[in-house]
Amino acid sequence: MSICPKNKSSRSHRDKRRANWKMNEMNLVKCSKCGALMMPHRVCKACGSYNKREIISTED
Image (cartoon, rainbow, N blue to C red; front, side, top):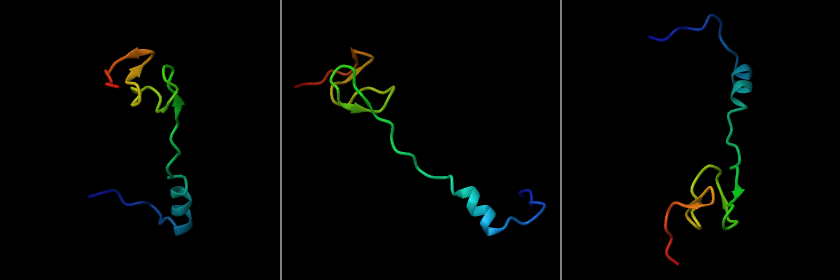
């Protein structure tokens, strides 16, 4: 069983708390090697490099 709250939370109080539960836009940065947009701290999908080093070999 779960713990019951001491007092009932009103709908407005509950909805004010849930108002900040939203999705943020993705943070994209330019790849240092090819300049494509990518998520930070991940391998670039366009060129396969991370931190200016080739991690995944891409066939052209």
